[in-house]
Length: 87
Image (cartoon, rainbow, N blue to C red; front, side):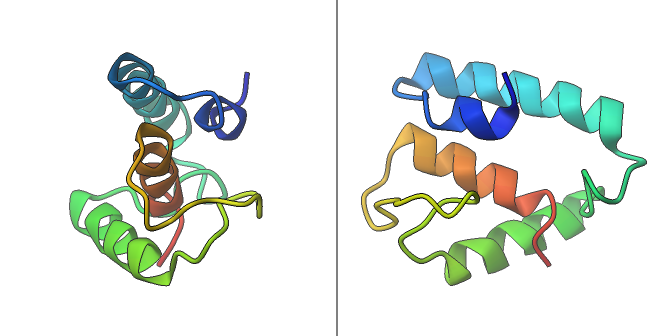
């Protein structure tokens, strides 16, 4: 299952923790591929996270409806995923 697909299944903190593990594995595998991970330093990642969070509307990274003003484990995962490439 792709990370983007998995985000839509996240309901619990355990699901989120597993997602973070998968995201870390993805980083280690793809950090040299700018199409997969544009923000490879902590500073770039945090900047991307901040900017992505500010720009977030009511859609997730795939354009699906998202309740951006209602915190959820899947929203947190979407924010982390967005931070991998958002400038």
